[in-house]
Length: 428
Ligand code: NAD
Image (cartoon, rainbow, N blue to C red; front, side, top):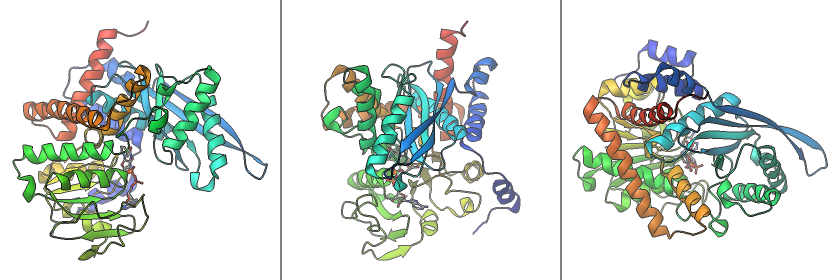
């Protein structure tokens, strides 16, 4: 079994790339393949705008605490900014900028009429009561009022936020505007303009893209084995989709560990981590594994769907999967990506595979501005069509240029954004 060289490990350990550095490097890499004006690339290295706000919160004990929030708006040449709001102690301005750049590419590769945005509050939501969370969210909506709106910038849930926060956010915004404006955020509960199928959409799209990749490599899905790290929202829906299509999902995990059945797990029977914490690693399966062992299983398809930076210089040489489909955002470090390219292991990137989330957010926004709800069947059918369109565009670049799936995805995204910039011109 090969191991990473000391140099690769040292380099990676010395410098863990920030989201912004990664986003800029990926932009530069895609630009090498395209004839894009240097000024346009320089512009895309920077966000349009970043707003930093102070959010005072009256705690339940009567004291006042001031939290810091951000909203980064990267690029709106193709339409309003779109991207999540996270409540997490690790939120930084730089991270929001980097993640907003990723959203620009994710929206562009899906050909959605949106640009990239991302924001959040530096806070641990687990330390807030429901009432405190509601007050913080409402005040954040107020602080961002001038930046956001269905035609300007449309936030969505992200780490530490969900449908309830989006409902409060929409209500706070609407109360001040004097009318109900559901299109100001997506990821709301369906009863107030949320879309059916939104929650399962990122995992579903991971499943759809994995299915396409399996077909591309001429494998029979019935003989295909799959391991999924992180049986949460993204991982569980991806695993269940592939299981339903006939693949054999042999291993899944949560934060406490993995379960393994060489004959295939019944993914409907395993409860996801979110539904009941501990139920994945506590499931009665033939074998238990660690999360590290799951990543090195000899399977056809590996889906890292838990957290970022799990495939690194430390383990990339030991991964035995024949194909990696990224469910989480940023699960593969740059060095690991290079090792996989050298080893001929294709990696289908996050901004394509999990883009079902923002795609159904787009459907939600369409439903909101038209005041008409779609059925779950329609959402899933249209999602399938959009994923196939994006897959076909990326596949064409892979075949035409002999590049990796990640490079091809960025080439598709950047060429769309750059063409729009060149068509519109620089102001003034
Ligand atoms: P989730 O919290 O529902 O599930 C995460 C899963 O990973 C859980 O099973 C958890 O136990 C497990 N996990 C957590 N830490 C782990 C660790 N250190 N090692 C192994 N397993 C661990 O989260 P999610 O919404 O499914 O998101 C997963 C990833 O997908 C994140 O990177 C997220 O940014 C990305 N993503 C989510 C969405 C979305 O809308 N949910 C959309 C696009 C991308």
